[in-house]
Structure formats: C-alpha cells, structure tokens
Amino acid sequence: MKQYCILLIMIVTGLKTLAQQPDTVFLKNLLQSHPELFKGILNHPTQNEVQILYTQIDRDKNNVPHFKSFSYRLNPKRYFYPASTVKLPTCIFALEKINELKIKAFTKSSAMITDSAFAGQTKVKTDTSSANGLPSIENYIKKILLVSDNDAYNRLYEFVGREEINQKLKKYQLNNTRIIGRLAINDTGEGTKHTNPIDFYNGDKLVYQKPALFDGNDYPMQLDNMVQGKGYLDKNDKLVMQPFDFSQKNVYTIADQQMVLKRLLFPETFDKAQRFNLTPADYRLIYKYMSMFPTESTKPTYNRPQNYPVMSKLLFYGADSTAVPDANIRIFNKYGDSYGYNIDNAYIVDFKNNVEFLLTAVVQSNEDGIYNDNKYEYATVCLPFLKNLGQVIYQHELHRPKKNKHELPRMVSNYTN
Image (cartoon, rainbow, N blue to C red):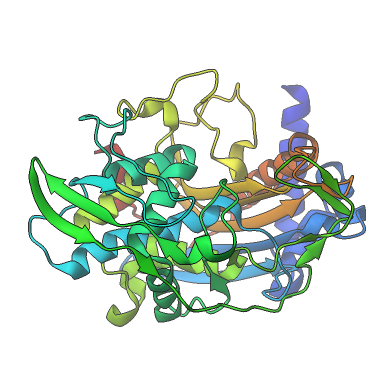
C-alpha cells in the first residue's frame, strides 16, 4: 500500500508539469517521466509498435462536449493487426442493416438461422447462451461486447456481408480501415468473399431471408510493417521459416477506432448524415454491454475463474484477475489481442469525480519473431503497459482543471438499466 501511495504521488506531481507541455510532445514526455513504468517500451528497438491517441473532453456551460487530442507514434501507414477491435463497427452495421431494411417484423431479437453455401461455411441453428436457446443478432452483440466472442462476430460478418461492411466504412470516412474476413477460423482466400444465407424467424414465421452473397471487390492497402518476424506455424503446426504476411488481413487504425467510439458515444457532435443509423434502443444495447463486466451478465452467463470481472478492461485493469472494479468507474470499450498485439479502444468515465476521456492504444511483443506459436509477452509487456497508461492518464484527468462541471446522466441511465 505504501509503495502504491508513493507511486501515486509521483504520477500526480509529474502530470502537473506535463500538463503545460505542447500538444505534440505531451504523451512522449508523459511516458519518459515514468521510467519505472515505461522504460522497457521506450528502450525497445521498435518501442513495441506502440501507438496512442488520448482525447480530453471538456464541456461548456450547456454541457456540450468539446475534444482535444494528443497522440504518440500515431501512424495510419504503420500496420498493426487489429484483432477483435473490428467487431465493434460490425455490431453497429448489423443494427443499421436491420433499420435500413425497414421490415417491421424483423428485429434484433428475431431467431437467426445460418445456413451454408460455400466450402468451409458453418451452419448455426441453436445458441445455448441465449434465453430461448436460439441465435439472434441481439445475443451475438451481447457476447461480442461482453467476452469478444469470435463465433458471434463471424455470424454478424456473414449477415452484413463483406461488401456492405466496407461500403459503410467509406460512408463514415473511415478511410484507413478495411474488414475483409472472419476471425479465428483461418478464413482466407475466396472463402472470405462468400457469406452465408441466413433466415430470420419470429416463432415459426419467416420474416426475412438474407441470401448468400459474393463480394468480388478487393481492398488493397499498401502499408509498412505488413510482413513481420522470421517464421510462423502453419495450420498443421509446421514451422515455416519465412516472415509472416499480414497483407490479406483486416486493417483498423487507431484514429479510425477512436472515431467510431466518438461517433457512437457522442452522436450529437456529428452532422446528422455522419451519425450511425441507430435507434435509441440500439444505443442502449451497445452502451449496456460495452460497459458491463462479464460476471454481471445473467444471460449469457460468464463465471469465474475463466471469466473475471475486469477481463476486457485492458486500459485500466490490465489482466489482473483479482482486481475489484471501482464502483464509480465504467469503461465503454472494445479490446483485441492476437499475434502479440494488445489493443484497447475505450471511453473511461468516473461518475463520482465527473471525469471522462477517450483513450485508444496498441502495443505488441513477439520477441522470438515466430507467429502462431502462442509465445507472446502479453502478461509481462503488453498488458502492464496498457494498465499503467490508463492509470497515469486517469490520474492526470482527476487533477486537470475543468471550467464547467460535467453532467453525465445519459451514460448513467444506459449502463444501469
């Protein structure tokens, strides 16, 4: 406890000085001012591929939010694997698709029966995690936001369709992003372009049929760092001694990730044409399950030890399975981890102290240069970094002067109801 208090004093004292620094060097100086926390990252040859975007929020006398951003090593041309962070826009686009179809009987709770029509596709007729034992878009979204369920994401990718997903990305000016495949099933080649036929039912009544689709488009992106390492394990666990190629995988930059989060959480700050086509109920669904801890959910149910309360809140708790969540703080986020990368895209709110800020960061550690061997330094490098980063910036926000008090009733009601 004494060591924690000393560290807290050091953080607060250092941040008072850093607050006076120019925008372009704020985060760099913040990291350098805490060598006890960040020296390993700063001294690493590639700085562990770290990119950070931190956005302060100040509200005017009418409680309208205004944003000021700070970045560190932010580079849309430097590739990192986005892992499960691509699931959040896919959830949003699935809800948009329902709204745009304008079929009154078709809702996010309609039973979703997935068929197959191309090699490697999966049929899904049941979902034991749902209240009625049937799959639905609503329950898939819950599972994605609570525990980052890969199968749930794959089903929504198939529902929206690859072409529509990428059209929506362009519509919302997410020009440095592409989503071109399913996750965790070695989805490559022609298979990524084909999405399953799906039937939706209310009881025994068929309310919508989504046909099998083929996306003939390619989405080429030439980025630095798309070829990495010195070897990888193939699908047969055979070691191949050549660099691992990410050129046919998803791309979702840090700036685009935070833009999606900002548009989702602060729609009133965007022109109507640039707001997501979501209903108030859609927003409530996403807010609730983005901020909920897995152990708070009753259906689906997620219990210890495999699932612990803060398992998905990387930018505040890291991977501390023993951490007791702060009752005053909620974190609306979507994280990802794969190929040695940990990413978190978060809106962190302290309702007691009227603190709110956006923080998005990526870090990687793969010291042996081999991919698919599950030998990554998540626990020793990546997760401690994200936890320390979130905690340091939170302490800065606690002590940062604000002209007007922040009122956050909308967010309170959304996560408690």
